[in-house]
Length: 175
Image 1 (cartoon, one colour):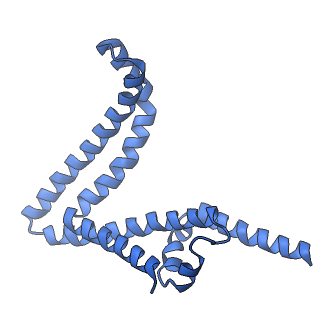
Image 2 (cartoon, rainbow, N blue to C red):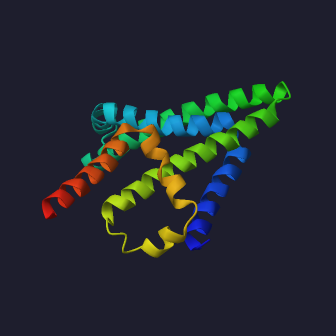
Image 3 (cartoon, one colour):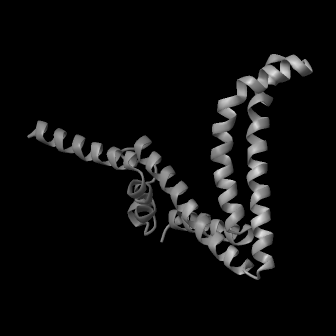
Protein backbone atom coordinates (compact mmCIF):
# COMPACT_ATOMS: atom_id res chain seq x y z
CA UNK A 1 0.00 0.00 0.00
CA UNK A 2 1.52 3.27 -1.17
CA UNK A 3 0.76 6.90 -0.48
CA UNK A 4 -1.87 6.94 -3.25
CA UNK A 5 -3.92 4.33 -1.37
CA UNK A 6 -3.51 6.34 1.84
CA UNK A 7 -4.75 9.53 0.14
CA UNK A 8 -7.71 7.78 -1.52
CA UNK A 9 -8.56 6.01 1.75
CA UNK A 10 -8.45 9.23 3.76
CA UNK A 11 -10.64 11.05 1.23
CA UNK A 12 -13.21 8.24 1.29
CA UNK A 13 -13.11 8.10 5.11
CA UNK A 14 -13.71 11.86 5.26
CA UNK A 15 -16.73 11.39 3.00
CA UNK A 16 -18.12 8.71 5.30
CA UNK A 17 -17.57 10.91 8.35
CA UNK A 18 -19.19 13.91 6.66
CA UNK A 19 -22.19 11.86 5.58
CA UNK A 20 -22.63 10.43 9.06
CA UNK A 21 -22.37 13.89 10.60
CA UNK A 22 -24.81 15.61 8.23
CA UNK A 23 -27.17 12.73 7.49
CA UNK A 24 -28.76 11.53 4.29
CA UNK A 25 -31.16 14.41 3.74
CA UNK A 26 -28.53 17.13 4.08
CA UNK A 27 -26.06 15.22 1.90
CA UNK A 28 -28.61 14.69 -0.86
CA UNK A 29 -29.92 18.25 -0.55
CA UNK A 30 -26.42 19.68 -0.73
CA UNK A 31 -25.55 17.65 -3.82
CA UNK A 32 -28.89 18.22 -5.55
CA UNK A 33 -28.87 21.87 -4.49
CA UNK A 34 -25.50 22.43 -6.16
CA UNK A 35 -26.72 20.90 -9.40
CA UNK A 36 -30.12 22.62 -9.35
CA UNK A 37 -28.54 25.90 -8.24
CA UNK A 38 -26.13 25.78 -11.13
CA UNK A 39 -28.91 25.17 -13.66
CA UNK A 40 -31.17 27.88 -12.19
CA UNK A 41 -28.33 30.40 -11.94
CA UNK A 42 -27.29 29.77 -15.54
CA UNK A 43 -30.90 30.10 -16.68
CA UNK A 44 -31.72 33.40 -14.95
CA UNK A 45 -28.41 35.15 -14.32
CA UNK A 46 -28.98 37.69 -17.12
CA UNK A 47 -32.43 38.67 -15.80
CA UNK A 48 -31.20 39.01 -12.22
CA UNK A 49 -28.17 40.98 -13.41
CA UNK A 50 -30.39 43.42 -15.36
CA UNK A 51 -32.74 43.75 -12.38
CA UNK A 52 -29.85 44.53 -10.03
CA UNK A 53 -28.38 47.05 -12.45
CA UNK A 54 -31.66 48.86 -13.13
CA UNK A 55 -33.27 48.77 -9.67
CA UNK A 56 -30.24 49.13 -7.42
CA UNK A 57 -27.81 50.90 -9.72
CA UNK A 58 -25.20 48.18 -9.31
CA UNK A 59 -22.36 48.34 -11.87
CA UNK A 60 -22.17 45.84 -14.73
CA UNK A 61 -19.35 43.75 -13.24
CA UNK A 62 -20.98 43.39 -9.84
CA UNK A 63 -24.45 42.87 -11.26
CA UNK A 64 -23.11 40.03 -13.43
CA UNK A 65 -21.37 38.38 -10.48
CA UNK A 66 -24.32 38.83 -8.13
CA UNK A 67 -26.77 37.87 -10.88
CA UNK A 68 -25.24 34.42 -10.92
CA UNK A 69 -24.41 33.88 -7.24
CA UNK A 70 -27.66 35.14 -5.67
CA UNK A 71 -29.93 32.59 -7.39
CA UNK A 72 -27.28 29.89 -7.00
CA UNK A 73 -27.05 30.41 -3.23
CA UNK A 74 -30.82 30.87 -2.86
CA UNK A 75 -31.54 27.50 -4.47
CA UNK A 76 -28.97 25.75 -2.28
CA UNK A 77 -30.48 27.35 0.84
CA UNK A 78 -33.99 26.23 -0.15
CA UNK A 79 -32.77 22.66 -0.62
CA UNK A 80 -30.92 22.69 2.70
CA UNK A 81 -33.96 24.13 4.51
CA UNK A 82 -36.06 21.26 3.16
CA UNK A 83 -33.40 18.82 4.31
CA UNK A 84 -33.48 20.28 7.83
CA UNK A 85 -37.24 19.71 7.96
CA UNK A 86 -36.85 16.06 6.95
CA UNK A 87 -33.98 15.62 9.42
CA UNK A 88 -36.08 16.99 12.30
CA UNK A 89 -38.98 14.77 11.25
CA UNK A 90 -36.75 11.68 11.30
CA UNK A 91 -35.33 12.65 14.69
CA UNK A 92 -38.86 13.04 16.05
CA UNK A 93 -39.60 9.50 14.88
CA UNK A 94 -36.38 8.27 16.55
CA UNK A 95 -34.93 7.41 13.15
CA UNK A 96 -32.00 9.81 13.30
CA UNK A 97 -29.60 6.85 13.29
CA UNK A 98 -31.03 5.69 9.95
CA UNK A 99 -30.63 9.17 8.49
CA UNK A 100 -26.97 9.23 9.60
CA UNK A 101 -26.24 5.73 8.36
CA UNK A 102 -27.82 6.42 4.97
CA UNK A 103 -25.93 9.73 4.88
CA UNK A 104 -22.63 7.93 5.36
CA UNK A 105 -23.46 5.48 2.56
CA UNK A 106 -24.61 8.22 0.18
CA UNK A 107 -21.57 10.36 0.92
CA UNK A 108 -19.26 7.38 0.33
CA UNK A 109 -20.90 6.77 -3.06
CA UNK A 110 -20.69 10.46 -3.91
CA UNK A 111 -17.01 10.50 -2.95
CA UNK A 112 -16.32 7.38 -5.01
CA UNK A 113 -17.98 8.96 -8.04
CA UNK A 114 -16.10 12.26 -7.71
CA UNK A 115 -12.75 10.51 -7.18
CA UNK A 116 -13.46 8.21 -10.11
CA UNK A 117 -14.17 11.16 -12.39
CA UNK A 118 -10.95 12.84 -11.25
CA UNK A 119 -8.91 9.66 -11.79
CA UNK A 120 -10.38 9.20 -15.27
CA UNK A 121 -9.59 12.81 -16.11
CA UNK A 122 -6.06 12.26 -14.81
CA UNK A 123 -5.65 9.30 -17.17
CA UNK A 124 -6.75 11.46 -20.10
CA UNK A 125 -4.21 14.16 -19.22
CA UNK A 126 -1.28 11.90 -18.29
CA UNK A 127 -1.80 9.08 -20.79
CA UNK A 128 1.65 7.55 -20.29
CA UNK A 129 1.20 7.74 -16.50
CA UNK A 130 4.56 9.41 -16.03
CA UNK A 131 3.41 11.25 -12.92
CA UNK A 132 1.86 8.44 -10.84
CA UNK A 133 2.77 5.29 -12.79
CA UNK A 134 4.66 3.49 -10.03
CA UNK A 135 2.06 4.43 -7.41
CA UNK A 136 -0.79 3.23 -9.64
CA UNK A 137 0.95 -0.12 -10.14
CA UNK A 138 1.22 -0.62 -6.34
CA UNK A 139 -2.22 0.75 -5.50
CA UNK A 140 -5.03 -1.58 -4.53
CA UNK A 141 -7.66 1.20 -4.56
CA UNK A 142 -6.83 3.07 -7.78
CA UNK A 143 -8.40 0.69 -10.33
CA UNK A 144 -11.57 -0.14 -8.37
CA UNK A 145 -12.20 3.56 -7.71
CA UNK A 146 -11.35 4.58 -11.29
CA UNK A 147 -13.85 2.03 -12.70
CA UNK A 148 -16.85 3.55 -10.87
CA UNK A 149 -17.55 6.41 -13.33
CA UNK A 150 -17.25 4.27 -16.50
CA UNK A 151 -19.66 1.75 -14.98
CA UNK A 152 -22.26 4.51 -14.47
CA UNK A 153 -21.72 6.96 -17.32
CA UNK A 154 -21.54 5.77 -20.94
CA UNK A 155 -19.35 8.76 -21.86
CA UNK A 156 -16.53 7.39 -19.73
CA UNK A 157 -16.97 3.93 -21.28
CA UNK A 158 -16.74 5.54 -24.71
CA UNK A 159 -13.48 7.26 -23.73
CA UNK A 160 -12.02 3.97 -22.51
CA UNK A 161 -13.25 2.13 -25.62
CA UNK A 162 -11.80 4.83 -27.85
CA UNK A 163 -8.43 4.37 -26.14
CA UNK A 164 -8.62 0.61 -26.70
CA UNK A 165 -9.66 1.15 -30.33
CA UNK A 166 -6.81 3.63 -30.89
CA UNK A 167 -4.35 1.13 -29.39
CA UNK A 168 -5.68 -1.62 -31.65
CA UNK A 169 -5.48 0.63 -34.74
CA UNK A 170 -1.93 1.74 -33.93
CA UNK A 171 -0.91 -1.89 -33.37
CA UNK A 172 -2.38 -2.92 -36.74
CA UNK A 173 -0.71 0.00 -38.46
CA UNK A 174 2.71 -0.89 -37.05
CA UNK A 175 2.47 -4.57 -38.04
